[in-house]
Image 1 (tube, rainbow, N blue to C red):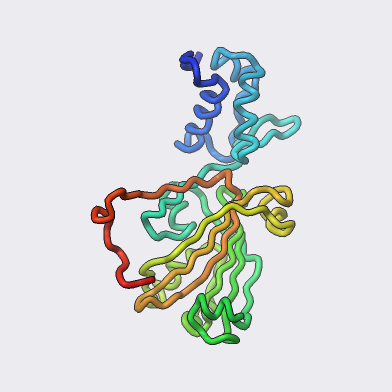
Image 2 (cartoon, rainbow, N blue to C red):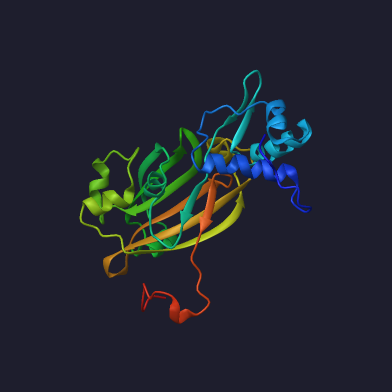
Length: 255
């Protein structure tokens, strides 16, 4: 039997939930694995079936687990921790964590830059911009919808690249465009019907929205990306400094 802390203030169902979460994050439980039944978990942890079920309920609501009638409770996702002290792409970060990232190309088109998009990419309004819409997956499960905008004349080679399962950052660099820095904004939003359909959510469900402008040398913006992620598989990690003099001066002279 797995011993749980009986210290007052830490509910048993929370301890069960976190024990299972840790197994998933450490890779001891993989996407597609079936969990023991609620009766077996109750016996394993020495609690009631209701307590065991409540611990699972939270992970089901988060999207890490899924109950399938006649099958049981399955692991359907694994959290990816985005470390925002480093500039990496989704594909690079997931691969570093030993996950199984993949992408499905939903749309690739060349559009005319609106005034807002032209301002973000520092091009003339009406300039040709490549719009790349991809569904991001971990272990075959959708976790994010990404829409990237790239000035066509800055990296025309993308027109002839396979964009399904590659990092755009690596593609840029393979064509001589060095990634230097980025500015990113993150906020909570409600999923539209289209976003919910791709991410397997209900319309209006909370999603983690982010937009990032990535710059190459000479502070030239190479892409502007909008991302809509199901919050469950994501964690965000940052390094914070109380004393500004202790923080690394990575970018200077940029508003």
